[in-house]
Image (cartoon, rainbow, N blue to C red; front, top):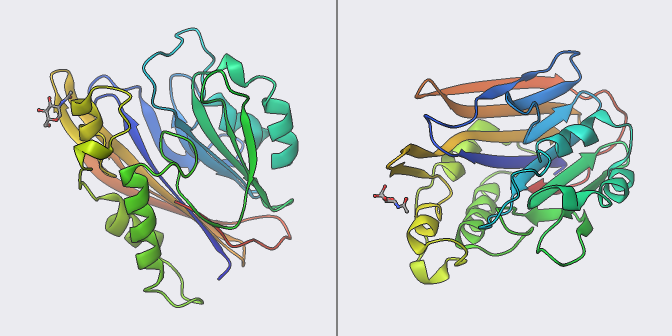
Length: 266
Ligand SMILES: *[C@@H]1O[C@H](CO)[C@@H](O)[C@H](O)[C@H]1NC(C)=O
């Protein structure tokens, strides 16, 4: 099966005080497709017409620098550059200390390589690693760190994949409905113990929805991207706007003449 599937859930502070974000769409110029942080202008997941994909997660940590650069610039810088994922990783690694903790994934279909870049743990050299074909899960710790929700998602994803034939189309909207709406919490003894136990417990499910004194906090956007070897790309988002859930799917053809590896990221 030559298909790449990517998933992401985005969590923002509250429905009331959260930074305004824009649901997926083509940006001005028509080259970049993705969501957008309307304050800082960056993105957490986007892809391009010529077959570049990038996304970002924050690293869960107590202390962050308010003066750090906006992490949402990182995927954008890759998507707008003409560099391969490998060249970009080598360039960006010199600047990673200017940002708060992040995990960045970059993929360009022309070189057919996916890279993972992270600036955590603090005090250690940054990570630059080529992501090999297979199933990987990225949460708010390093790639494949087995947090309970990471293990749960990986297992459920494998189970779901096994229900499809190799040559069968995988409907990504169904995958969101079957995998990403899971609000099962972890056992308290298995939490990473970075913040308060109560808070970590509330965030320990794949889908998060918590009532806090400041308002509701939780998952506001679930995005899935699929790219087939026929170069058909499909980006789907299920998201909150004006306190209601909406859905959007955008399909397009990638303009490049390359084969796609069997890389799956959840
Ligand atoms: C965790 O969630 C519960 C239920 O929504 C809520 O009452 C509690 O205040 C939350 N804890 C924290 C630390 O936000």
